[in-house]
Image (cartoon, rainbow, N blue to C red):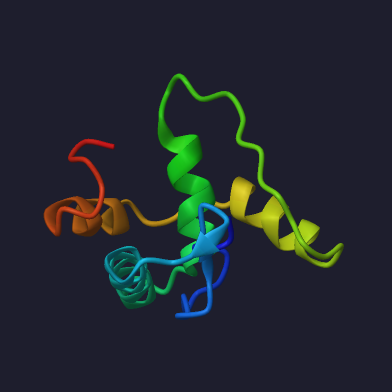
Length: 98
């Protein structure tokens, strides 16, 4: 619903088509901070996270503007550093081994 679509989740973002709850916003901001520490944009990590599981063959990503298509394609095709996933798992932000 757009919460992970920017590198800096804001309080006016939406989650499940409503206002984002404070705890969910805090987690999104923590995800963004870890991504930034690895020089990865949060939306890039979000797309790659969906594609990392071996049973996933595609991910459908909605875009709000035509100019977002190119970045979404780039995010799908460019891997992020493995160290990002380790760091996110170590912090309990994603399941270990994902």
